[in-house]
Amino acid sequence: MFDLKQKSALITGAGSGIGEAIAHALARAGAHVYVSDRDGENGQRVEEAILSEGRCASFISLDVTNEADCASAAGKVRDDHGHLDVLVNNAGIGHVGTALQTTGEDMDRLYAVNVRGVFNVMKAFIEEMVARRAGVIINVASIGGILGIRDRLAYCTTKFALVGLTKSMALDHAKDGIRVNCVCPGRVETPFVKERLLEYPDQEAAYREMAATQALGRMGTPEEIAAAVLYLASDEAAFVTGSALLIDGGWSAGK
Image 1 (spheres, rainbow, N blue to C red):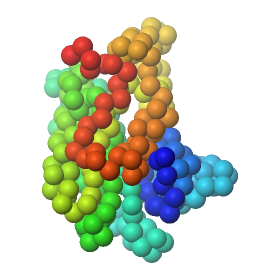
Image 2 (image 1 turned 180 degrees about the horizontal axis):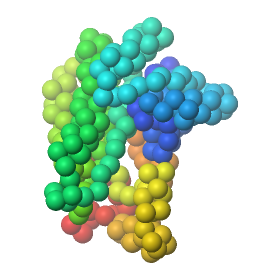
Image 3 (image 1 turned 180 degrees about the vertical axis):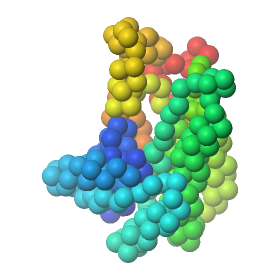
């Protein structure tokens, strides 16, 4: 099950956290994984770790806000494999603040990465997927794309947009043999979350508060999100498109 042998996959923001876990999961399932990130040091570290396990990986320097970078990444995959089977749009950024604490520049910055960046990457690959009548696209959204979260105005706005983009593309390209889904994680113990904890005077209390948001009483792990992405990437999910898969530890169950 969940066999990706002979397939190629590109993951954006794969240099750490959820993206890194996804890269490892898809590589272990047999895919040739393109580890893409604008952080060359961490991207190459993930590539080397996958290669050290005897799996296939290539690092691609990629800034999703740069259309030329996206076109270049598509060209490299085309030169290497002829096509891309699985695209995972994981790159994203966050922001803390209400409308009073959010500037227009903040909104533009988050939109540029979380929405336009996803569009840029998909635009670079979708034409060849349509021509082949095959392809899988998985976007990493958030519980913040399903529910409003206090002090996360800009972040939730972009993640709601990403869920809408996912559903629209799924409808537009179902006839082309392309499946488009997104995963919506709750709080996950990533480097980003750990850095946020350092901003609190009582880090242990902040951790407990973040963990308690989930009904299960803990945060998720990057590997748990990666497992869901692997399922959506596989042929076992052939009847799944246009879905926003919640992986939130029960956060949304009582809402």
